[in-house]
Length: 116
Image (tube, rainbow, N blue to C red; front, top):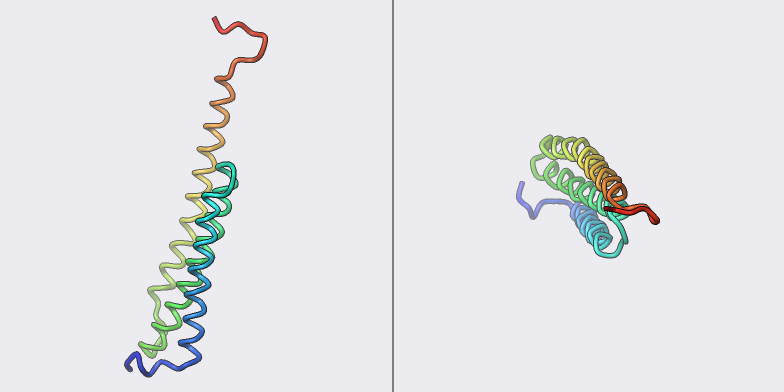
């Protein structure tokens, strides 16, 4: 099967999934610039980029499966890998942010106390 033989509905659905995945990733990445602190930034980037990656992988599964005339399993493995590693990475970054915030507040002198 050549790329010319992909049905119109699959081509349209794949294109819509790619466009929506790109927009979701862009919106999530813009959250990195717009949101005020680490915790809000992590939330925006994680949700936007995970949903964007999901849409791109769905489009890849659809087009690759139609092109190969069988279900393509590699994209499912990529999806499982991203679903399992992205939240763990986010949790570790949040923990380091909490630890750093706690360490910064412990270093600040309490008003009225002499630091000498």
